Image (cartoon, rainbow, N blue to C red; front, side, top):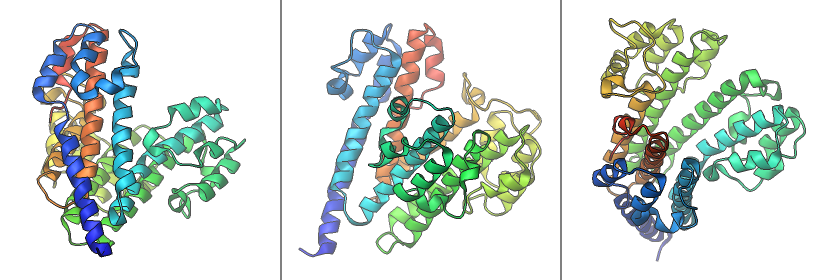
Length: 367
């Protein structure tokens, strides 16, 4: 069997497993049953068919965080199994999926180092999909300069630091700038990979992932702009954080960089119907003129936060990815769908624990 044939067989095997994983996601009926639960034990019982083995070790009436951790354990185990069997461009593709979590972990370690937090506590809080072999070595650093030098040598994120960040940038005031700079470099690199890799270029993977990554680039540009209002971040520095691709690039991002208020954001995204509609639904454009609901909302779609609507759009794109055959993008899509499922489970559990069941149905995304 040739190497190319082996790759095709392996990729097809992985795709079959992922489609099987997709079929085990909670259904609308499952969520309906969850909304009727009265206690966390009831939630645990309802999740039994999908998460039974992972929930078995939980004590009676577990905390919502413990329940979420076990759900995450399942996601991680499934992802690691796929990764262990992936070869060729699919293996590299899955490495790229882990880089986003690595960025969050490194940002956490930087913050912890600044505040002299306990090493063990920091490692326990790191996302498991962003774990890399040398990560514990980063915690040995006693100051930011040592940590910076370690990151450049010991982690896969080194290319995203070089030429963009110095150790002087890694202070508490700049940590979000650091995070967003790394994400910008990462997204541009990932986008370049799916468009230029010989095994992916011109395939459904290239088509679907380009759409997904363009949406992610635009989402980050919009959020960075909105979150910069009222802060010391200058318009010039803000512009440097926007990924250099996406449906908004270059005209829309140029207008975003000049925006002074939510109405300016609304005008900048006016050429993309999806984003214009989202901002209208949150009251961040048009006649309302206000900041609107950015981070949390209840009620119908008109009462959802912008982040809720972004997640909703992400779920729509992820579901559509499964209509394509022979594409790595379904691994990304399944990962996002599973993460949303965990957010749903956590939200439902928290509402039940706080005796606020009336809030449940207005937040969760069912797919």
